[in-house]
Length: 86
Image (cartoon, rainbow, N blue to C red):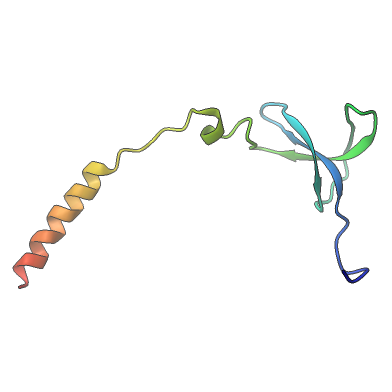
């Protein structure tokens, strides 16, 4: 890697502000805030609104939309027009 052209890739703490879930990971994102982690070291703090702890897909609260009726109506409507053109 060339020196001086890559951002600083360092350990950071990412905290979900809605669930207070935090994880120590690595990132290039800048932050002015810091936090003392469980190991006693101080790391930059990145605050996020959604993480795996609060996203409906990962928490199991995601609603599945039933589109079968819509697809069938679409097929029936345009199948008739395609057959009429022949």
